[in-house]
Amino acid sequence: MSLILTSKARPMSERKTKIMDAAAALFKEKGYAASSMRDIAERVGLEPSSLYNHIHSKSEILKDICMVNAALFVDGITCIREEGGSSTEQLRKLIQLHVDIATARGSSITVFNDEWRHLDSESLVEFLKMRKFYEKSLRAILEEGIRCGEIRDCNVQVMLLSMISSLRWVHEYYRPEKMGDPQTLGCAIADLWLSGLST
Amino acid sequence: MSLILTSKARPMSERKTKIMDAAAALFKEKGYAASSMRDIAERVGLEPSSLYNHIHSKSEILKDICMVNAALFVDGITCIREEGGSSTEQLRKLIQLHVDIATARGSSITVFNDEWRHLDSESLVEFLKMRKFYEKSLRAILEEGIRCGEIRDCNVQVMLLSMISSLRWVHEYYRPEKMGDPQTLGCAIADLWLSGLST
DNA sequence: GTCTATACGATGATAGAC
DNA sequence: GTCTATCATCGTATAGAC
Image (cartoon, rainbow over all chains, first blue to last red; front, side, top):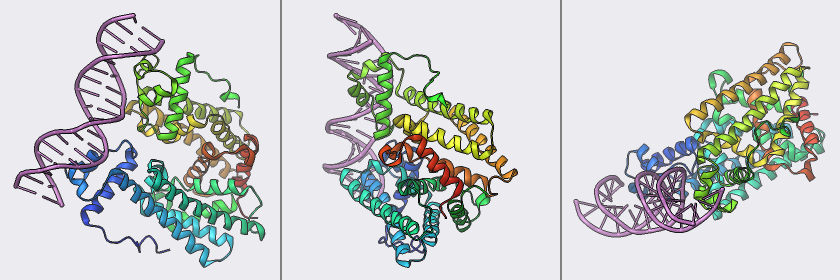
């Protein structure tokens, strides 16, 4: 899954990159609504008004962060579906995708997870479409697994939501020294999900 | 677990209750920072300044919501630990506790989950202490289970964080008509966690 | 591209009449 | 307890000099 490294976004000016990074970090720390353009400007060493030479508005920053990350997940799961393999294999790859993205883009993924509701209505529609696509794909993996007897026949929606939610701590609490590299962690979480806690 | 019904909070005036409920709903919809005192006042049918006859500040509302809910979890897990039983039984009860609280206090629990970082530093310390206590208790359950061979010997921190996180969708996406009553849902999630997805 | 200056609405909170 | 009036501050964003 080399998607994280081979970003398809066209190159960004160094200044704009710094602004986006500072904004993502701030949104993570205080949330979108509580982060001001003055805060962002201060972090990046500019006067507030100068930010507008690089971005159009605060809401545009949020939109960019959310969409870039949503695309990573959509592309990732599309890739996994195309590669095929058993449901179990696909689930393992999917969990690894989440862990890879969460460990590689800590602040950006927080914003994607928690701040998307502040998107303006137009962007929100687009964002929710992508999320819907992602959920539909995951549901398909689970249903295939149930059909061929690989996955237990439980409430699919409950499985799906539990699985996705259970990965939402990684970006915040991942500690390499305690949990190993992302590959190791992904494997451990996949084992947990597939085999359960009981001996 | 009758904790939810037998609230220990001293009685609140009807007006104050309405203010707190409206605030919790708003904080859930837009987040704490993006919700204004004017918004709250409008919902409850008062002028903004009148709110201050019932509460001292906006931050106090947040503090009350967070602390009341934190106490529910702390009391709940304390109860479960005191009742004893096998680790598996305790884990089942704990999952049920989460589901019960999430389904019974939707908006309040969202605030507790996502908005606590806006607490002022003093309240934040108190809040984090309670959370720490909760995590320590859950860790003890898991470690006991591993020691006596009831729970698989995995990274405890990874298990703990995954378990807690996996329950964070309930308050938002619980649909009784699709998932049954809270008891049924709690049972289903507990089965998922204990036995895993694989057949 | 960066700055200073500024527009102008929204914010949390208070004072004081009723 | 509720209101009107008001304050001081901070919010996003723009204009225009350099």
